[in-house]
Length: 270
Image (cartoon, rainbow, N blue to C red):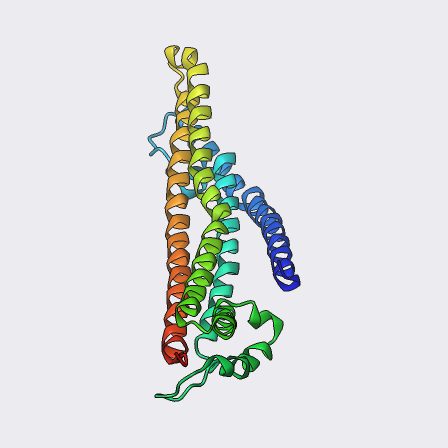
């Protein structure tokens, strides 16, 4: 692992920790100052109407639906996952920009011999360290180095395929945290369901005496937590699949760039 790669991994881990901390602070602040006060106000208002014998509609306010701890945790995880995917999307933009650069300039009909590899490698070696760590420069540099040493076009092609395949596996493995979050969100929703149903069963004796307020409130916790968790999970899954698609396209486009700009011009004397 190069020094630049190690630094990149450390920066990404630091970003993820800061993103999680900020998500907790922002979401918890909104819930404490906005969501729960409004939910409590609506619930108390309807309880007073019920106690006075007035007709009222069971509240379905957004504040009431998302007021519980499980929904708060789901929103925190959603923001954290979106922040991680945003960071990786920025890397994809940088990788995409490399495809627009003239890293290899070879005129049509030109033959690239093994002894020409060193000259073609100089523009790649002169790139900033951050750009050299991108997929396309690494694939081109590896192909030229392999061609210079082996004087075999097939080995150079295999080198490009190997670099792209390794990069694809790396990008896929780095989505493991996002995949865990997409699993954890509905799981937290089901925890809220179990908690709500358990609380409702614990208040069954009150319902038998005619007071169903506690039971309905607990069942509301159960169903609302599952509803919000599944909805958030669908949003996170959508963006995760879009990111994964963008990553796969980068690898395929980089592989095609190497084929069109370099590999098809490689020739040996034999």
